[in-house]
Length: 130
Image (cartoon, rainbow, N blue to C red; front, side, top):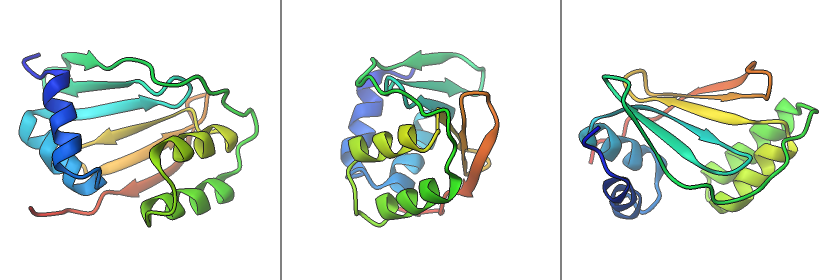
């Protein structure tokens, strides 16, 4: 994969951490999809050929066995509206049973999963034209 973690970090900063803008920047870099693991915070990025690159773990969270979908959606909406930072959002995910999320850039979707791999919530990513 020609993609580097430095390019991904620049995309995060340039997007001012606004998720739809970040997604557009990743698309331009050739990212096809990525999965973020809540327990340690690392993300694995894949290109169209399924080659991947991962960043380093950032945290150590325990994922709840109890899935609270309604509370998770409430906390997700709060985060999306600027009410929490990323670290708090990750803690909210862990507390409500979210193990990871998968972003599919061609489909513009983000799907949240529990530890057993069950889909808990799916959402469309707004298309943001820069």
